[in-house]
Length: 211
Image (tube, rainbow, N blue to C red; front, side):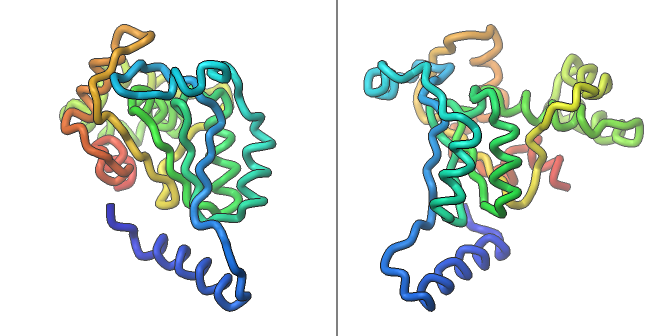
C-alpha cells in the first residue's frame, strides 16, 4: 500500500533526525502485542501452539504506552493475537496518536465494522442521516447497525475514530473457523470478500467515513 505524502514525510524526518545525530541504530516500527488471544482458529496459524501458555496474558495499557514512548519509532503496529479483543484498544490507539505515532491495527477484520459503527454512534446527529442512507443503500451497514447508530453513544467510552494517521491491516489470507459469535464468518465475507490486505482508505465503510 502506498503511503500518503504526510506519512512519508514523517518517516523521512525521523530518519534524517537520527542520521544527523549519528545514531548507530534506531527503530522505524514498533510491533506491539498487547495480547496473544485470538477469536479465530485459522488453519496453519501457529499462534495457539506457540503461545499456549500465555493466551490469557495481557500487557497493561500503561506499559504499552511506555514501551512506545521508550522505543520512539514513528510507526506502531498493534498486533497479537487479535488486537480488537484487547479491552483497552480504544485507549491504546488514542494514547499512541497523542504521542504522534502512525498506528497500524493488524486485525482479522471480524470486529472492525463493529468498531466503526461505535464511532458513527458516538458522533451521530440528524444531519448524518444522508450518510446513513447511503451506507445502507450500498450494503455497508445493516438496518440493525443503523438503528444502533441512531441511538447514539452516551456512555462516554472512547472510540476508534478514522484519521489519516490510523490504518487497518486486515489479514484474512486463510480459511477461518470462528470461535464465537454466529455472524463471524458472515462479517469476514461481507467486509473482506477479496481476501487481500487492506488499509482504512481501501475498506469501503472506512472510505466513506474519511470522505
